[in-house]
Length: 146
Image (tube, helix red, strand yellow):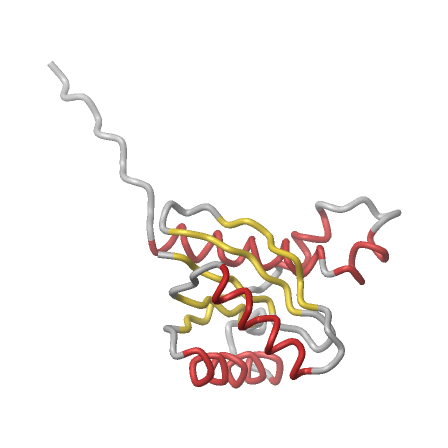
């Protein structure tokens, strides 16, 4: 199984690739200005990486409710499903961008943010969390007491 984590945004789309081993790796973000070009680039990644399932970050409000940004993510997820015919899962992405920004020095944050690195790191965090829930590691067996 191959998963593509997607952190959708207005200017950039962060990407991460993962598998059922639970490993999520940031992938170069989509930064094309025209939506048609972004869809074409996304299709190329799906094909080249042999993606079988898509995981879309959904920015729920802090109280868990669905706001305007989450509704946009749901619409984007529906469009993905229609275009690619693959299973699409919504994953809670609250605070993933914040966590991704913390991994970059403040001096380089503006430069890194515009390149899409932060978006793809956020996609890797949300995909990693999704994979950990879906494929939890087996519990270590406790030795029996004598």
